[in-house]
View (tube, rainbow, N blue to C red):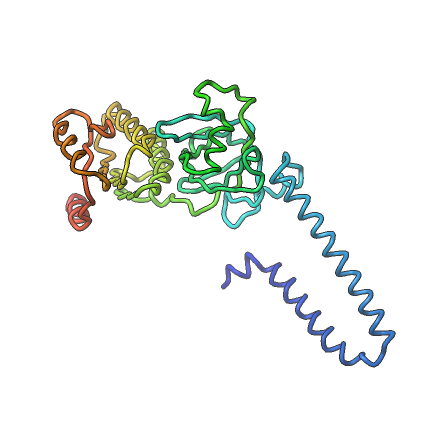
Length: 330
C-alpha cells in the first residue's frame, strides 16, 4: 500500500480533488436550483473550462502517440521515453532503421537492431510493428540477445499472415542479399517483463524450457557466458543444469546452434563441465526411434549435432532433483 501512494500519489490526489469537486457541485446544485442566473452562469463557466482542458489534453496525447508510433521521435517523445513502471520500460515507441536480418532454417528469421539508447535485461520481451506489413498490428517477441552485446535481437518463426508479410518485406523470400536501405522500418515498444537476473545470484541453477518457452534462455545463457569470460563480480555461478523439452527441434535449430557454440567455447576455456544440458524430444514415432538407435554410437547427436545425445520422452523430475541435490549438498 505504501508503494501505491509513492508511485501513484499524484494520480490519487487529482482523482480525490476531482471527486470532491463533483460532490460539491452535486450538493450545490440542489441549493441553488431556484436561482436560475447563478445556476446558469456557474455551469457555463465550469463546463467551458472542463471542455477546454479535456480538448487540450487529447490534442497533446494524440500528437505524442502518433509521433512515437508512426513518425520519427520528436523532443517530447525523447523526453518521455524513460517513463515506465520498471527500469528500462517505456511507454513510447521508436522506429529502428538500422536492422540486420539473418535467415535460419525452417523459415525462422533473426532481426538484429542497433541499441541506440535501448536498455534491456535478460528474460524481457518487446512489442514489434512493421508499418509496411500493418500500421496497426503489434506482436510480442522475447529478446534473444544478451545485454552485453551491442545490438538487441529477436527470433521470429514464419507461421502466420503477419510474419509471412514481414518475411517478404525483408526480402527473405528472394534468397539473395538485400541492401540495408531496402529493409523496412521496425517500430519497437519496450522492453517489458521482469528481468531474470536472479540466476546470477546462485552457485548452482536449474533452467527448464519447453517449446517456444526456450527463447528467453538464449539471452540468459549468452549473458552468463559473457559474464563468465569477463569475470563479472556479480556472477556466483559455478554450475548450470539446462533442460530443453520440445516436440520438434527443427523449429528451434538456431537454439541448438547456440548450444553448440557454447559447448565449443567452454571446451576451449577448459571448462566443459560449467554447462550441463539435456534435450528431451517429446514428439517422435517408431521409425524415428529405430533411426536414432542405429546412429546412437556416433560421436555427435544425429538430430542436434551436439555431443550431448538427445533423450526421448519426458524427464523423471523426482530422479533429476534427487541426482542434482546429491551432487550439490547444502
